[in-house]
Image (cartoon, rainbow, N blue to C red; front, side, top):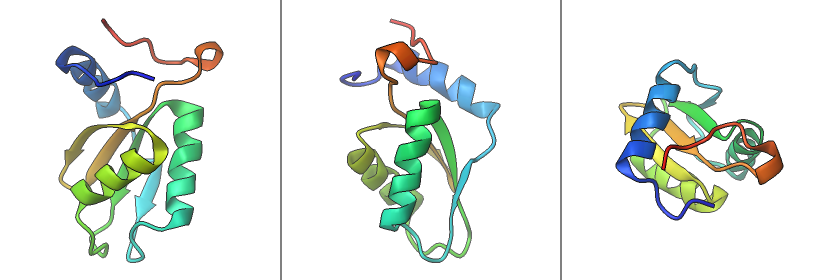
Length: 101
């Protein structure tokens, strides 16, 4: 696993995420164990995911992102408004994204 993302790697991932649609949505129930499990599975399959936090969610997207990153051992690439982008490096044989050095 990458220790910490440097600015070049973060910028590269932000560029990839710009073209992505959110694959998960958090609503009025906010962050639940089920949501966390879904995020973990999505990261295992895709490495880079975008999450949408709906208007009816009372939790702060930045707090949600921090908790998700901690629980899923991933990195918060960015939080803009109600959108969260997370990255977790894939296993060697399943790696989809090659980060710049």
